[in-house]
Amino acid sequence: MSNETPKNGSGKYQLLPPLSTEERDTLRRLIAADGVRVPIEVDENGDILDGHNREAIARELGVPCPRVVVRLPTETHKQAYAIKANLGRRQLSPEQVEAVRETQRDLAIRLNNEGLPQAKIGEILGVDQRTVGRWMAQSIESNGSIRHVPNASVDLRLKLPPALHPTILQRAQAGETHAAIAADLKVTPRRVGQVIAKHRRKDEKRASRVQAVRTAEHAPLVVQMDAMEFLEQEVEAGSVDLLLTDPPYMTDVLDIASFTHEWVPLAMSRLKDSGRAYIFTGAYPQELYAYLDVLLAQERFTLANVLVWTYRNTLGPAPANDYKQNWQACFYLRGPEAPPLDCEKMTEQFSVQDVNAPDARTGLRDHTWEKPEELAKRFIRHSTHAGDMVLDPFAGTGTFLAAAAEMGRVGFGSEIAENMLAFCEARGVEVRRAE
Image (cartoon, rainbow, N blue to C red; front, top):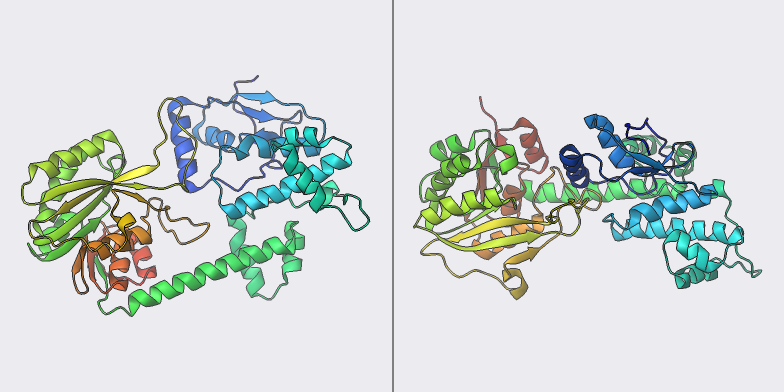
């Protein structure tokens, strides 16, 4: 085993879809804190079988990356090992899992053509023998023999890298056929068609949502201002029906206690006695303490619940010594004259809100910790009526303001960052920039 950072290895065995942004950020933080604790595995030629992401991040950080050589007899065995080593620790969508299974099926046929028994094939692939038997049965041709799958004919690229998507779309728009594009990329035309169809669906979905926001009865507005200045200068005391916001987390501010004591009391003073507040935070103990300290100190509003937003689709590598966080907190407060919650579904009134995070693979997402539109609309529906004002002094990409407009509410907020304002505009939110 070597403790030197390995040279850039081939990606020929990088057969699973790339890590999501959240997964990669989590892995990077772990490696920055503890180094590479699990060696990467390479074949006798130095090609990485397991650990492409660890190796790439270690090189970025300039930290040692131990490696160990795994000797396997054939290319088929190496490909099977690369999938088996990674599959159990990744969170994949059902479509991605099916693509992996499709590849494993072809690998199973190749191993069968090498004369291996089904029990051994299952062991190599990490599946049970009955699954291998079913794959063999599905692959029997009309003459009763198992179809032959040569190495060169198997499309092991389970997902075309996102970096290639713009090129594929441009070539398709220029009139090139799927077959011509696929030939250059050495994939099947079906893979190219999937990329094009996926982006077409996303474009149509985004256009529909933007149109709904722009044509809403109450156009949402975000002002380019610091949150404190915005609350002091643009929002009247006692004028707001709902405070729905996702402020910067403790990882993004110098002193979380000072930050919360600065903005929270001012924002709460802008609420009506009949109003409510939902304040999202991370799950860090210090951050929870800071918000509890300031929210429990005020007496006008009741801190009724610490809601939990949990998600199952953005899990990355687990920490070595701690538990993996797959939730965030949301402090829920109600005013002394707040009417009953408007919850038609009892399950929506549970203190744990189980909603997937926005996923760029299957929907729309502009920012790393953007909140789900479904969750935003749920809270807006529970606590406001048509024409009510929804305030977000940390508007970010405009998720909450756009959702408010779609539901007939008045969305009003602030955001200082120019790149976030561009996302707001792309969602159909009106932006008033600083002069």
